[in-house]
Image 1 (spheres, rainbow, N blue to C red):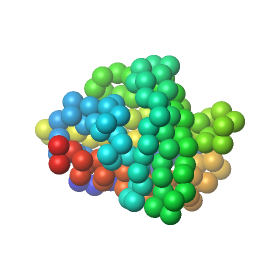
Image 2 (image 1 turned 90 degrees about the vertical axis):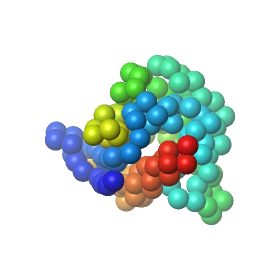
Image 3 (image 1 turned 30 degrees about the vertical axis):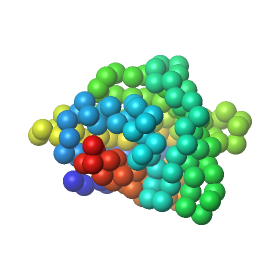
Length: 158
């Protein structure tokens, strides 16, 4: 079960793509993605915890949360859902955490049935290659790997 970053044709300069094959049915993986009680158990890289203050899982709905780093730093996050197709796809915009409502990136998450399991693909699209490179330099790729590893452990324990 491999998680890796790869460019997507035509968007490689602006995108970060991380995939993982889960040994779990698509409905279960999707459910863990759209339930705040599940998400707070696995969201974020190793050592992070998540506190959710708002979670309205519908197009136009918002998800507001704080990721608490292992060093005590808090990272406020604001997500607005654009599209939800159960159990196939979730599309959302993540805004900068400094409150200026500038779009940080757009994320498309797909859930594809694969050999009795689920291939999950995270596709983070940034406005410019420079913003993509900045996020990659700040650990977005490794953070994606770790987040999906935590999801796998959560699913195995469920």
